Image 1 (tube, rainbow, N blue to C red):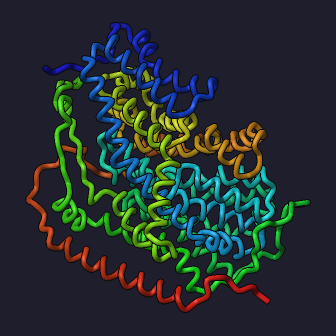
Image 2 (image 1 turned 90 degrees about the horizontal axis):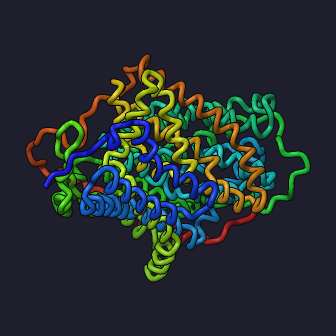
Image 3 (image 1 turned 180 degrees about the vertical axis):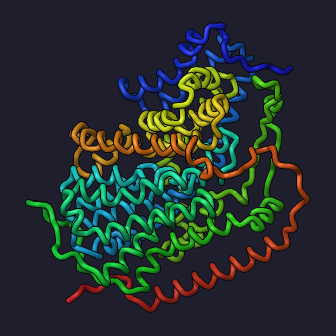
Amino acid sequence: MVWKQVVDPFTNIALSVLVASVPILFIFWALIIKKMKGYQASLIATGLAMIIATAVYGMPVKLALLSAAHGAVYGLFPICWLITTAVFLFNITVKSGQFEIIKQFMASITADRRLQALLIAFSFGSFLEGTAGFGAPVAITAAMLVGLGFNPLYASGICLIANTAPVAFGSIGIPITVASQVSGIPELPISQMVGRTLPILSVMLPFYLVTIIAGFRKAQEIMPAVLVSGISFAFLQYFSANFLGPALPDVIAGLGSIICLMIFLRFWKPKTIWRFANEPAATIVTDLNYTNGQLIRAWSPFIVLTIMVIAWGVQPIKDALNSAGMAQFEFPGLHNAIQGEDGTLLPKLFKLNYLSAAGTAILIAALIAIPLVGLTYSEGANVFGATLDQLKFPILTIAAVLGFAYILNDSGITLTLAEVLANTGFLFPFFAPVLGWLGVFITGSDTSANALFSKLQYATAQSIGVDPVVTVSANISGGVVGKMISPQSIAVAAAAGNLVGKESELFRFTVKHSFIMLFVICLIVLAQAYALKWLIPAYEMIGTKKATMLPNVSTGYTYLALLAVLLATLAVLILRTAKKKAQTPDFVN
């Protein structure tokens, strides 16, 4: 039996929108006013969505349950699989003590507070967002800056603001993966569109950060370094997002801007070393001298990670892995059981690509990294167990949010909301980032915001004749500037900066900057929709590509063999260096 979606169940669009808004308004109320935990709010909102979908929209109860299950399963794989392995790799680095070397090294490059903010809050924070995400970058970088002697409010505030540039590509690009799955637009064009929006913000952000810290004049004093940091980051972000996909822009841009600024500082120094007036004493030692071998070993998990994720993105390797380990099936009872408003049956397929999934690449990187950083596999297993315990509530939240999003989309609730948003007509692209901003403000996650609103953005854009990739990408780009004022992010930054109980001060510090950046993104998106259409990439929707001949997987296996040789050689060199060099740093005389 096939059920057809309903857009206006009351034949009164105002009343239909009012009812359709209830689950989303509940999330606002639960998180902002009631201060409910994310997983609790998501589960209750899912229940509300089910009731409205069945009682108001006439969706069969069986289909509503299956739709929620489909979303929850997708939340577990590949999303939670990727997040778990990424955080696992990061935790291995921390457990082994190698992350302390990375922290000390980052802090020792310069004594100027302005340059330290660029290196740690902006570049290093981006790198961490790309590998771990979920609050880790702000927590780590804010704690590092406080340890160096930064004013706690400034340390936490600028780390929140700096975190805007990388959020869209966080946790190996998972926000874009979710937006792709929910909207039906392939990952690459979304990545390309975001990669043609955020670099504009990224190139301005270093100067903006330094101006907040030290004022306009003091920011001008280090303009050469600011330009090196911003331009290198923006270029690498643009290049990787457009040509490599959504997995590595943060990792590549973060590391690249660190390297470029380090090289530049060998030849250029500011005339004066700027510090805060009456700043607290530093607690991180900055006069340590590490050997190249120690630094390479400390960074080895992330070096291996970068190699693995790039390799997993190569099409012949993907084809080979999928030929050996992938199961795709129609979701039972749901596939082609719902008819869209245009009369087409909605396919509901689940792809279990357990070998070619990015999470598997990260797991392999973590397994290779365990002996490189000096841990045993028994210790690694303990770290993995601790990681699962650490993420149990985020995993539950993500599964619930995806179930919620799938019910909204399959029942037609998002189409009802899109009907009203379409009434903004020509100006909708201007407001599209605002929806993403609100979503991240409420959920604390660009991933969750994309799960909630990507289909709505797609439907609304279609209804007004704008390419949907513009507005779906706008949801992501707008969301990044909502992160700095999200209650969850504020709480993380306050804890890291010893500001517990002063969250309202931190919120007031960041909120105006969030509005300023949101307005800039809204203008950029409006221009992309109408005046700069040449920036929009060409693409085909998922599932519309014509069948092609089966790929020749022998090339992929050859590449995998070469990858194994490369990783083995790298591992041998790192382990050999580790045996020769002392495990503790030498102090500079």
